[in-house]
Image (cartoon, rainbow, N blue to C red; front, side):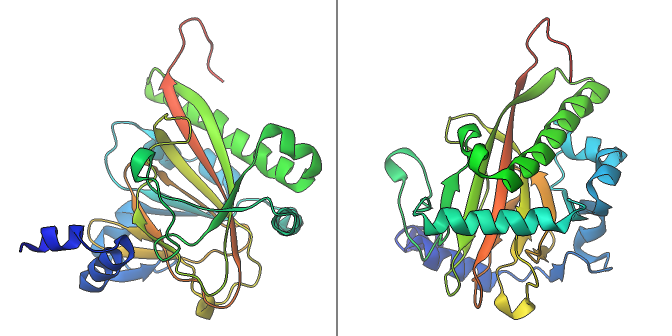
Length: 271
């Protein structure tokens, strides 16, 4: 029996484990100074959001013709760290109120729940929820700023595209759980194709021994990003395979915003 045929018969979490153990690409931390494995070509690290949104690298990230699996890390996306701390408190309130549900993967008839493959619990944040979530309201403003920047980037690039919609999801990987096997962020809950993934982390004093890194699978290497409070990660949804490593000693909270785009509607002005 061919290896691929054998893998098709195995549970998804075992397939992911086998592939990860067989992967000989080097692993770097996102802050490493190494230029090996094409890391420097694909990585951009910024100290704050405004410096990134005004950088030419933002246009490179959102350029639809750019097929490189680039990613950007913004270490302090929100200047006031208390906003992220309060958002964490609001997240824990929602969890204690029973608003989270076990996440699934796949779609349609293949949709399933398997905590060995994906162990997070999630809640979708809607506009009507924000009245009870003042800190999340500020985070939504940050994502709206990014949405405006995407439209402006398209205009500078001469692309006839605009942001169509956003999806906002709050997730927690409970301590002692498996994480999330390697995948790409493709289809959305509405069926629209996701274009840009933006993740904000809500974990203060995160320790390396707690695991839970976001692992990005580049062509020539793998890159681990620690989920520290206020850190923002951006990458093209359809391009970059990624996973969440097992979470050991603390609950891991994150807010993810997905941007979908569409051809610009005739007669509308840009943002």
